[in-house]
Image (cartoon, rainbow, N blue to C red):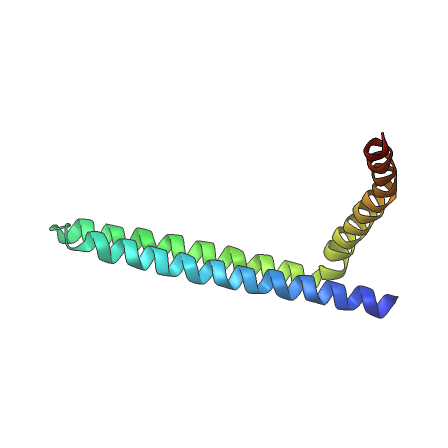
Amino acid sequence: MESDLHSRINAMFYRDLAMAACLVLLLWLTIAFVYLAIDRFVGDPAIRAALLIGAAFVLVFNTASIVAMIKHYTEDKFHIYSLDIRHLDENRARIAATQPQAKKAETATARS
């Protein structure tokens, strides 16, 4: 049971890690696209520099926050994901417990 919990935790962690990496990559691509799309309309070099510096700040700070989040998740992944798994299992058990009653009511209604 314990190895099953660890494998589920690792699966959830690596799925979140992959999503975080994809979102950071998407952010970089989006900022690059927007900058390149509006660069030709900006004639003033000072405004162009301000746009570039602003984009760099957004990218650096957002990337740093995602890296910090991943570091925190790596350190506390057992605690974070074991709570998620426990709640998911409880929810599945609750749904499974109510489904037979719903099926009985459905068949009783169909017979009527």
